[in-house]
Structure formats: C-alpha cells, structure tokens
Amino acid sequence: MFILEVAILPTPERLAARPAHRELLAELKKQGKVHMAGPLADDTTAVIVWDVDTREEVEALMAAAPYYSTNGVTTTSIREWTPFIV
Image 1 (cartoon, rainbow, N blue to C red):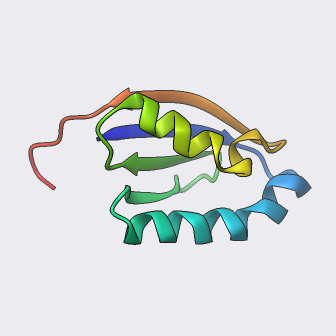
Image 2 (cartoon, one colour):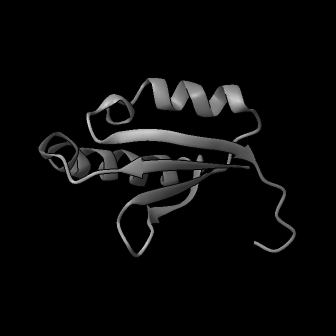
C-alpha cells in the first residue's frame, strides 16, 4: 500500500475538477486499487491510500487522472505503507 498526500487549495479549477476526481476514486475503489481517500478536516490536505504493489502503479494512476495536474493540487508525498491492521 502507498499513502499519497496532496496539498489542496480552494481554486476554481480544483473545485470544478473535484466531482469527476471523486467519481474516478470511487471506481478505483471498486477495482480494489484505492483503499480509502479524503481530505483532512481543515481541507488543506487530502490523503489517498492506494492498494497497489509499486510506486510506479501509483504514479501511473496519477498520470492518467487530470486532477493531479490541476491548479490548486500539489503532491507533497508518496510513501509506502505497511499496515498491520486493516
């Protein structure tokens, strides 16, 4: 698993792209590639827990989704995670 953190700003572009982004994440959840996702309570950061085997898979999924290059979205970290309770 991998944890993606993105800094988010309330730009018009990001807010307009958010519904399609959330639909895509819901579809990726059905496919078993997203474990969970959502913004932190202060709405300045969002976290996605990817249920994939490699960082390259995370990067490919991100590259295929226009949201991550939208004004107001900045990737701050991609880290491998080894949970022991799921």
